[in-house]
Image (cartoon, rainbow, N blue to C red; front, top):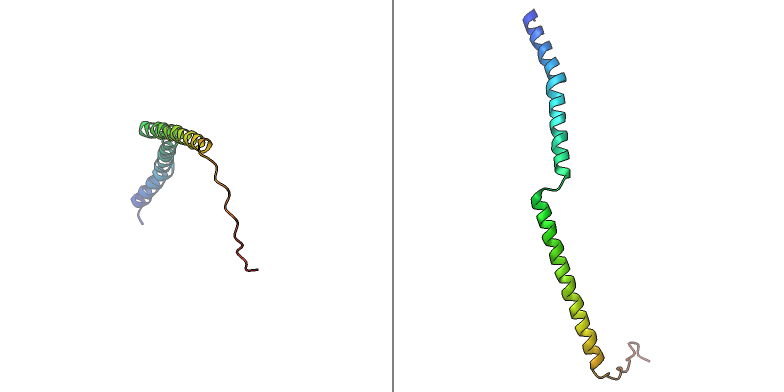
Length: 88
């Protein structure tokens, strides 16, 4: 190989090691850090889910209260006679 080819290989390898490789590493580190935080769309979605969960919780509590009230108002039935599953 001639001297010009060796110089070109040396310059390319130095650039790759000290410029391109650290640049790629820093680029992906900043992308990783940016993804760790919530985006505005994600925050809106979480807020909507929170509101939906609270509304469902209120509905369930009101249904439970209605069921408890109807159980208290209803006359009690006598318990069923138990049947043996084993033949005596």
